[in-house]
Image (cartoon, rainbow, N blue to C red):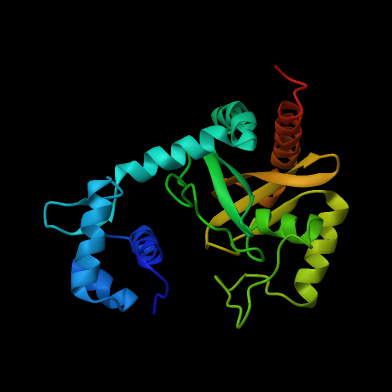
Length: 248
């Protein structure tokens, strides 16, 4: 049950709407957050006046366009996103696969930007999505190269697919391999049919972000990984150079 004051309850509503796959009614929102209907309606009205929530033709609520404006303004100020944008565009255009940029923010690995490719992966994960540390290529990079900055989730850890490499000896061996080779992979471990290959963005030897190519496993077969890995490693170095001001 949400605790705290009005601001926290309003934020709970925004997160609830963000996580939902469809617009929600007042009753649905109030029930999911254990809020009185009157309180839920009052908070939604206040958020609506600021454009933070919108209503669909059926009167249900969804995230508003003002959130897009706020997020865009934040990303435009993020130096990693600014440095990576032309690199992502070039890689997606040249490879035809979706390219992601992710980094640690507030203790979570978040997708900061992406450039769509021409493959099947056209919508997920979205910018702002939190990546699981043990089931994604980018998460494995952080566990291997910045273990003090991230941690495994508390409580029971579930497998996303039958191929998820769960914490234990197998994951330890995988992370040792990542440290040795300097890149990480995810082969159907987070989403069946999805392969991801990730490379670090390093500044003074410190992991500040990661860049990954992701696409249908059929389009990224193991025999092709060598070529894609070299390209994604080069992309990581190019972003680092731009961050350091070594490229105009």
